[in-house]
Amino acid sequence: MKILFLFFIILVIIQWYFKTKQTKEFLGHYNNFLQNGNVLVERSKGVFSGAIILIQLDEEANIKGCLLLTGATFFSSWCRCEELISKNLLHLELEDFDNYKKPVRKVIAKAIQSYQIDSGVELNSKMV
Image (cartoon, rainbow, N blue to C red):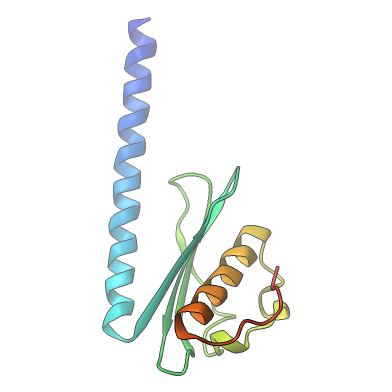
């Protein structure tokens, strides 16, 4: 019983360590993006996996940088969304991010919707 308890405690400590490391990496990317423009962060939670998107925008809502974190564990890493860079966030269509999995499409659509609401732009049709 003591070994099982010790094993559980070790797993919790390992998870805490990697989550802390992942959070520091997020804050580093966020601060980097913030130095060169506006930043939009959105997340989508799912039952088994989720997604977080970090988008750097200029004044006209053109995407200058985009990072994506998907997965269910702390082993997930940030990847660049090369397909979205240099496009306008307000003019993205479903075809622009159709090759992504459902949690990613959901978080991109959520980011578009939240930017439209915050900037007062009229909402378009549903993206997902």
